[in-house]
Image (cartoon, rainbow, N blue to C red):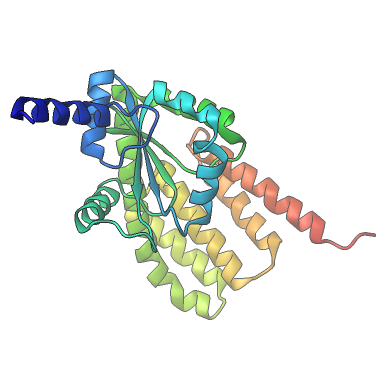
Length: 266
């Protein structure tokens, strides 16, 4: 067979691989080439395909459904797998792990939305409701594919990383109080820590929610009133307009509903 023909076949196979719009690629570098050529964004599914229950549900309920095929009109689809039974090549495993670290992936499934150059602008995960609802969710998230949206997303990720660092530091301070179930002591330590670190805005709210609610649950297990009290105090001292307040109010309503259900009927 002439070399020219072999070269042409190889080129055709390469093009077919890069334009596999209806399938899922497994290499982000390859996906970026397709995205640039087809002027699309990139959807990356970080998944544990053979062990993660929520990953399996998301694939079955959304990605495997015929309606989700419409996503390929807007996104180049990429699956980066972290299996326990299925074997990846050492190169693929190392590459996936490096990307998980780069994008601060902490759990599965994590769905990252990237622009054609590979810069992230949104993140999500499992959402119930099926493929049509998920497509609507992705469409809403895609509004952040702007310079400002990517800037805000990057800042959010930096805040999340800082929140984890502060949370780990605060956890060590709180351990002695929690072991003695000293809720007042724990709350005093939280206030002192937040003031000393001069934490503000959404980062402060996240830190307070995690520390105060976990302290209430550890010191007074099963006491929904203690959790509601902590939430109410956080709400009272957090400036209006702080991102995350609406979610905290919804969580309060959920706790209150559980508390009401647990109370004996008269």
